[in-house]
Image (cartoon, rainbow, N blue to C red; front, side, top):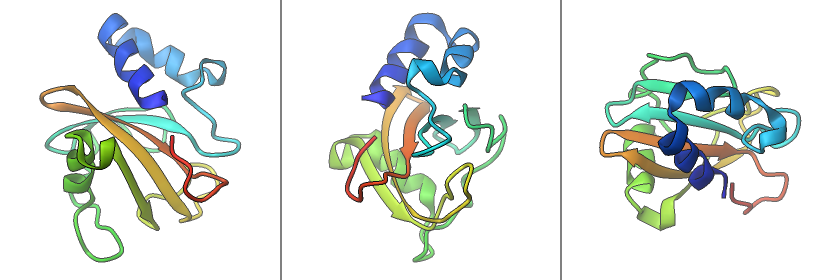
Length: 132
């Protein structure tokens, strides 16, 4: 599972060394041409520290992003990272595919890197119901 592998890599070699591997499609953490697979990291307060797609910049605040029902996205991602639904989260129209910018259904797996940091693997599966 990409999210679990990303967390393990971050724990083993740290953010600065892991970023280069996250950006290399051959490492399996990035597929912008097809599924949009990429890894994001953010604090529990909603500040981004990692996005290997280049879509979100470090320091960006995602705390105000709303889903289609007007609910904040951050608490939903934090709940997944805390184990709700086995870490899986899906949403339609909240975050667009990083290359096509289509608001197709997105799925994610989120986990805790440490108590205050979350890592999610995001993907826009070609096969509805697929999970990153």
